[in-house]
Image 1 (tube, rainbow, N blue to C red):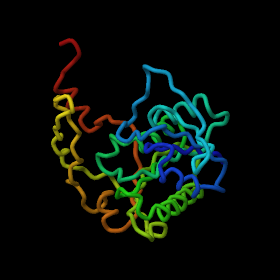
Image 2: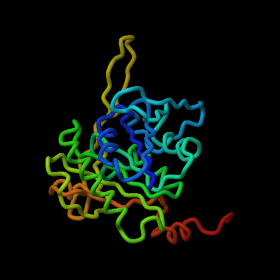
Image 3: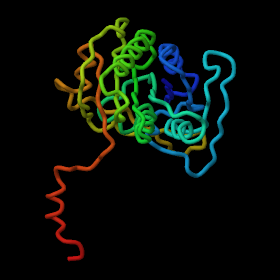
Length: 256
């Protein structure tokens, strides 16, 4: 078993270190992570500049490969150039904050896992619901528990999959029941925050994410609020299959 681990909070993030330590003994582990915090970068790849890779110095991150790019860059470069052997599993996280509902479209944590999935490798993204790393070690033990269950499940390796896992920040996160969920939805983001730069120019900060709008039973928001671990299977196909016929009728034959 060979496992590739990445994240979006950067190679020094406590969540990455905790996930790597929790997965020791499950197989050979390669770590390739961004040099800086790259939260919110989604699936972006650095196509207009070269990427540099170096090994992290002594400390908790010693031996990690570091890329001066995005989370997707990290996994892409690992799978297409850095690793001599294809991994059996890609893990991403543990993220400092939830990745539920619409968050998954922007999340670098989910994107790193998705990059592995796009290359045909099973992948799991892990996040803590609340920022601040409270009860991180319990979540890391819970992440190992999820990985062990996935590896032991019938059919592992037969086809790639992409799972998005969110843990409540609780001291018993490692023993909480988990539930398979669908993505909830958020209200629109809060307005941008305008400020003046030291030079008198108007600058803008992206506003906070909107509150949960669809958070009923069966959603990831509901599961975490009820003290359970949310596990959401994701797919990459964004096609609105239900409306294909309607759009075909609306637009008519090509060239008419």
